[in-house]
Image (cartoon, rainbow, N blue to C red; front, side):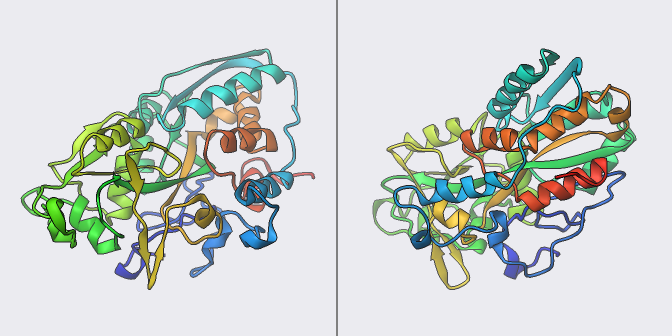
Amino acid sequence: MSVSRSLCWLSLLTAAVSVPSTVHAQSVATPVQQAAPAQQGAPAQQVVPGTQPESQTANGHPEQFQIMQVLEHLPPYRPLDQIAGKVTLSGSTTMNDVGHQWAKNLKLFHPGLEFNGTAEGSEIALKLLSEDPTIIAGVSRPVDATDQSMLQAGKCKAPIAIAVGMEAMAVFVHKDNPLESLAPESLKSIFAATANGQPKCKVWGDLGVKGPLADQPISIYERDQASGSRVFISRVLLSGAELSSTAIACTSNTEICKSIANDPKGIGFADLNYEHPDVRRVPLAVGRDIVAATEANVLMGKYPIVRPLMLVLDKDQLSRDGKVRESVLRYVLSRDGQLVMMQSGFYPLDPGFVQHQLTELFGQQLR
C-alpha cells in the first residue's frame, strides 16, 4: 500500500508488506522475502486482534485485560537445547531497557549465554551490523529496501528483520498550549523542511492558536541523527521529507518531553505512555474524527501513530551459532518475551503473526 495524502495517518499493523513506499510494519525473511502482506484496507484493530470494546472487558483496567488476552494465546518459551555462547544486542535506545530484561531472563534458562552491547541508536546499529554480521541490531522503525541494500553492500549478506513489538507515539506540547488537534498536513507544516530548510509553519498562529502564544515561534524538539525515531518520522509520517533544520536534537524521548515542559513554545514526538505534569498529548484528526492519544484508542485501532520494533540480523548466522540466535528469537516472540515487552510500556504482537514469523524462519511450528 503506497503512501498517499489520504493515508498520512498510519496504522502500523503487525503484518509484513513490501517496502519502500509502505506504511506497515515489516518482517524480512530471507533476502527480503516478505511474509504474507496484509490486505489493503485491513482494519487497524489488527494491532491487537480479538480485543473487545471497553464496555465488554473487565472493570477497572480494560486495556491491560485486552493485552493479557493476547498474551494468553502465545505459547511460553520452551528451551530447545542447553545453549551457550556470546550475543551482542545493540541499537535502539527505545529498546534498551526491554533488551536488558530479555537478556536477564534468558540467562535464567541458559546460564551459558553471555550478552553484551550498547544502545547507540538504530541507525548506528544498522551500520555496525553491515560491518559485523554477528551483531543483533535493535531498530525502532520499519526496515526497508534502502536498509537492505546498505547491509548487503557490507558484510551482512542475508539480512532479516523480525518484528518483536509495537510502540505508540504521540505529539506532545506544553500543558498551557491551547492547540486543540493536528491534521496530517499540519504535521508536515510543522516538522518537514521546505526548500530553504525551514518549516512552513513558523509561529503558533499559523496553526490557528490564539492568545499570547499566537505570534511566538514554534520550538521543534526531535531525536538526534542516530535515532530510529527520527528516521521513522521522516520516512513514514512526513512521506520522506527531511525534518526542519530548526529542530533541536535530543538524545531520548525523556529529554524531548522535559524540554517541552520547560518551553511553552515546544512540540515534539515521544512515546505515548510518557507522563509529565507540564506536557500534554495532542489529539489527532483522523478523517472526520478527533482521536485522543490514549492507550484505549491504540488497542481499539483508532489511534494511528504506531511503529514496529524490530530485531535485525544476518540469517546466515542462524546455522553457525549452535541455535543461540534461534533461541533469542524464539524467546522474544514467546509469551515470556512479549510479557516483557508489555511490562516495558510497549504492545505485544498478534499471536497469528508471531506464528507466521516463526514458520517463515524455522519451518512449521508445533503447538
